[in-house]
Amino acid sequence: MQKPAIPQEDATNAEPSEFPFGSNDVRLSPREWLVAGIVLLALSWLVPVFWERIEPLRAGADYRIPYPLGNDYWTYQRYCGEACGEEKTLVLGDSVIWGHYVRNDETLSHYLNELIGEARFANVAVDGIHPAALSGLVARYGRAISDRDVILHANLLWMSSERHDLQVTKEFAFNHPALVPQLFPRIPCYKVSLEERIGIVVGRELPLLRWADHLRIAYYDGTDLPMWTIEHPCANPAGAITLELPSPDPSPEATAEPWTARGIPPYNPPWVPLETSFQWGQFQRTIETLRRRGNRVFVVVGPFNEHMLTGESLEIYQKRKQEAAAWLRENRIPHAVPPALPSRLYADASHPLAEGYRMLAGQLLEEESFVRFLETQ
Image (cartoon, rainbow, N blue to C red; front, side, top):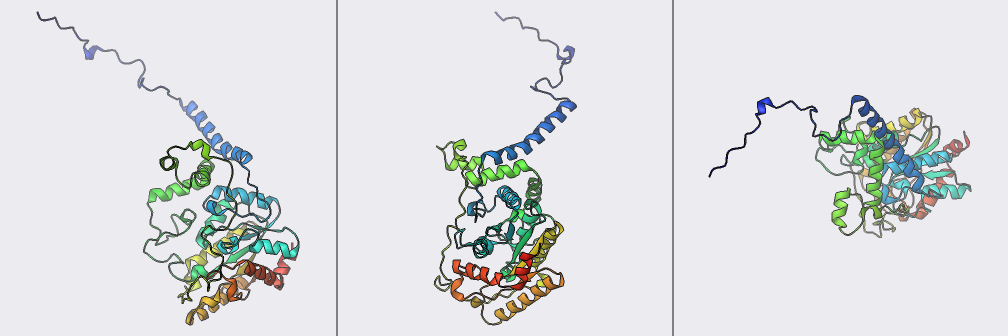
């Protein structure tokens, strides 16, 4: 026997829902959205500030940004603030100043302190940075560097070829891409999507994102959390945050031997004219940024390992040094162009060994312009 059909309610006669979008758990009014936004903004500022209180930096004498934290600009900003708070003379530059092949107590800043008998100089260099990246680093993460004495290193190695100068059109990976100009001026070899460029620009301005990058670099091997959990399937992600930052040791792959003992051959780089060099223009921009903030800037040009240069390249390099010194004189920037160190004191084209840094410190302290800069307040 067939059962009678159960009548269904006519959909056309259904009453409209009393609560539109009633499936949502929470609906915020405009005022509530405003309050939520203010809370999130406050947390994005307070969390990084609170983290500085619980994570010790231990930036004592001869401290430098640890090699594994070279891309951790949140830590760099924090360290700059501490160094400036101690009224130090800041020594700024790339891996030559950082000390790629030496311990943190064998750098130029260390030997300057040793020779003058006081802890006056602080190493605020970053390993692997180039002038275009240094300009971005100072502009965005070195804002604490104001009304200070700054020793700035000019490494002409970055103008030794179009590749070093970032002028080639073929894409290649270079150091610190997040620090270079993302939109203008255009870098031909830097070919990332517009979305990635915009993300970098936005991330520079948000403390919470910079702090998140710090956690990723300092505790998760530079990878994001999902990738880290894949590589460490049995590890507790929270346990990786030890609050112990790496020590400022030399680069792990650095071999502290003279370049001749390492089998590095002499070479003949073409050199880029300074007037068309992108890197030189970015170096000038760094000086402008520093001086605009009230800093007194002293520039050290070189010393490059001239013993490695062959043929016409040595003559061109000598000319580039003279052109750099001429521009510094024209702009009334105190500077020194120390002579090349003995060949045995270089590890490669531009990095001295420990004895080389000691000799360079002595050369600078015998330079009249450098002594006058230190004595003038």
